[in-house]
Length: 120
Image 1 (cartoon, rainbow, N blue to C red):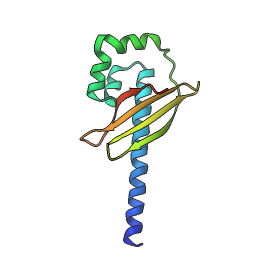
Image 2 (cartoon, rainbow, N blue to C red):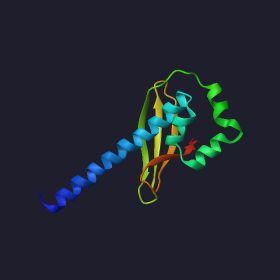
Image 3 (cartoon, one colour):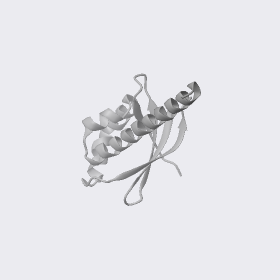
Image 4 (cartoon, rainbow, N blue to C red):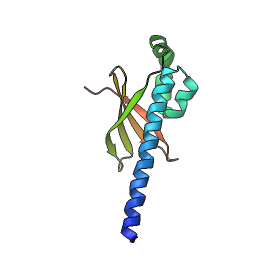
């Protein structure tokens, strides 16, 4: 194998690994909301967003409105800006409801949900 072929294979495998991490974070975030678990939510959300969500007991009020049934979600990466270090993800549940998230890579190389997007 030539040097360039190895580089291309390495790049593609890195992209596949990053995509699987992004999907894991997005699904983990939504599943933690569905299971009403604050500590689980903390793993997948950036510190700033967690503080923002916790202000005025927003998470607790949000959990009161949600059913306890866990949903199955499909993840679609809608946009990826590697230079700026963020990925836009759209989650769709079995009812067809969608949720858009902005995931950002932190200094440790982990993706975290930074923002919940309300796209029209």
